[in-house]
Length: 507
Image (cartoon, rainbow, N blue to C red; front, side, top):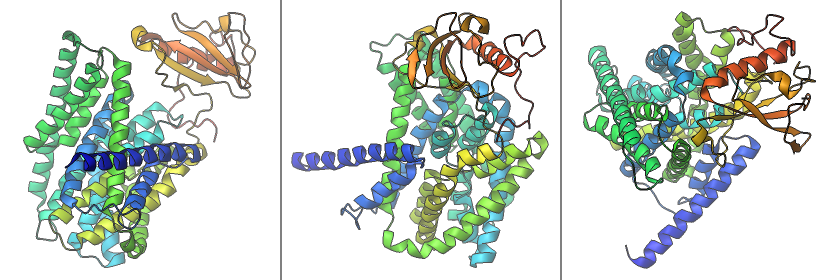
C-alpha cells in the first residue's frame, strides 16, 4: 500500500467511524438499537451505495470472531459478579438446554413451514438460537429492572455463544441430516469445560499480576486488562476449546477484582467494545448484497415468528421451571432474546465451508436480525412496564467518569422520588444513611442544588448519592424503607427488604 492509498483508506475508515458514532447517538435518542444503524451505514457504504466492495467471507469470519471476543471481554469487565453469581445455574441451563430446544423447535418450523431440508433447517435454527451479548448489554443496562433479571439475561447471552458456535460448526460440516448425539455432547462439554477453565485461570493470573506489578504509565493498565481477556480467547481457541466463553469469563474475573485504575480500565473497555461493534456491524452491512434481500423477507418473517413466539418461550419455560422463576420474568426473558451480530457472523461459517444454500441462509438471517431487533429492542421498556417489572423508585447506577470514585472505591447512584412516595417531606438528616453514604446533589425541576442536613426532599426530585460497596445495600434498604413507610419506617417494622419474587410494582 502506497502512502496516498493509506491516506484514502484512513479517510474512508475515519468517515465511516464518525458516521457510525453519529448513528449511535441518533439511535439512542429515538430508542433504536445501535446495531441497526451500524448495519445501515455498512449497506450505504457498500457496492450498491458509495461503491465500497467487500466480499471476502473468510476475512469477515476471522474479523467478526475477533470482534466478538472484544465485545465479550468488555461485557465480562462491566458485569457485577454479585448480580450473576446466584444465576449461573439458570443461565447455564438456558445457554445449553435452552439452545438445544430452541434449535429443534425453530428447525421444525423451518422444515414444515418452508420445506427446507432437515440439515439446512437445523443449521438455520442453530445460527439464530443465540442471543446477542452486544445487543443485550446495550439495551438492558438502560432499563431500571431488577438486577437479578438483568443479570440472568446478560449471563445467558455471555454463555450461549459457545454452544451455538459448536452446533453451527457441526451442522456446517456434517453430511447427514442429524449428527450423532454422543460426539456432539462430548465436544460441547470439552469446549465449555476447557474454555471456562482457561478463562477463569487467565483472569485470576491477570488480577494477581496487575495488583502486584507497577506499570510505568496509567494507560497501560487498561491495555493489559483487555490483553489478558484476548489471551484467554486465543489460548482456548488454540486448545480446541471455546474462546468465546474464555473471553467472557476472564473479563468477568478481572472486572470483579480489586484492580488499580478501574475507572480508566472500564472506560477503555467500553470504548474498545463500541469500536468492535461498529467495525463488526459495518463490515456485515458491507458483506450483504441488498438486491438479494427482498427474496429473504418472507422466510425471515416465518423463522423469526417461530423463534419469537414458540421456540424462545418454550425453551425459557422448560429451562426455568425448576428454578421457580415468576411468569412475568419468564415472559420478559422470552421477549428480551435479542439477536444481533452473533447470528450474522455465524452465517459466515457455512459460506466458508461451501454448504449448499449458505448464501440464502446469510440473507435470511440478516433480514431476520434487522426486522426483529427493530421489533423487540424499542418495545422492551414498554413490555417491562406492562409486566410490572420496572420500579419507578429503583436505584439506578450511573457512570460519571469525571468523578474520582475509583480512588474512593465508591459508587455514584441516583434515585427518583415518585409521586406518592413517603420520601416526600423528609429532611436529608432524617434519612440516616449509613456513613459514609451521603446525598451530594439534588436535581429539582431542572435546577440543581447542593443539599444541607435540613434540606427537605420533594416528589419529583432526583438524588445523587455516593456509597461505598459496603454501605450500598444498607443505603438502598434505608431509602426503600422510608419510601414505603416514611421516616418512622424502622419503628413501624419496615426494613426496606426487596420485593418478594413475583411481586409487581407498577405497570
